[in-house]
Image (tube, rainbow, N blue to C red; front, side):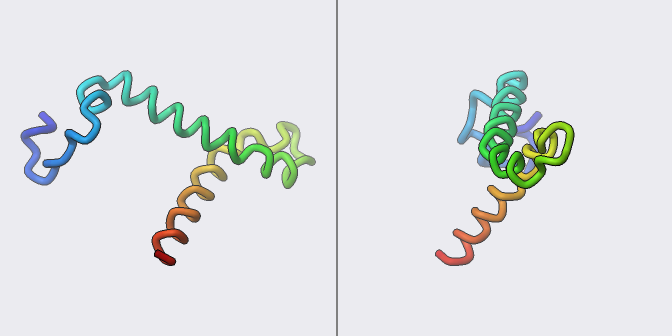
Length: 77
């Protein structure tokens, strides 16, 4: 049904994830996990008083930092 939508015409850039839903879900989970792991040292240093040392917040911080970084790069370039 994705190819029947009039607005979406360039979904073929990632045929593996657009035709295989479990693979697409796995890739999204992997990206979120990697961003969280990259942001965890910063969260660990800043949120040390918390019981989990900032682990639960690190995925959100990873998304926010990556979005901010991409926004800054797009604004400068």
